[in-house]
Length: 276
Image (cartoon, rainbow, N blue to C red; front, side):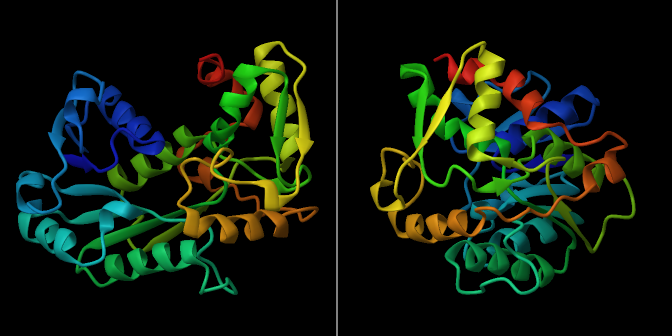
């Protein structure tokens, strides 16, 4: 059985759906099972990190997102003692050679990676760069009109579809040969923020415009899910991407046999998220 933490998140949900479709037993761990709305074939269990031993009976593989890894090794110790053999961690592309190791997002993910490496479990690390799903931050503005206000119109990323990340996670969990591997994941093309907004507009049949605002005007209304102490670090990261070609890998195709999907496909797949 595979246990999936963050089962209602973008990647976790996609992974649960994939495992169920493949006929694999999957235990979906979520803090609110009553509202999870996951596939009927999944065993949905309340995620209680204070009682981790109850989560892993019969589990051999674990998909872990960084917040679930916690600040200690208790969860991983419980997983190992229950018989889990392999853990796949959803880390971040910010962890790389030459990175700013003081960046709070780097600190969080690099710390989780160290705990995984020290856990005694076989491990695989997934390091995706920009998520295509980050574009959902613009959804409230798109529902309200045809203008999106945001920072750094020319910042370049290669956004990756969350189901492509899930496909790699599925391969890492089910296929041999991924133990000890670090997989860097990106989408197939570089796009500016303005180009992403235009692509969403095409998916909706509308003409959307991106209007750049100074970063000092960016606050909780634009980034409601970003903790205040992280916002300034994120803005600096976004600024560093202006006019800079992003890393583009072919890892998705190498592992799954299918090329990573372009952002335009992601926008088509998520039209409903911009319609309210």
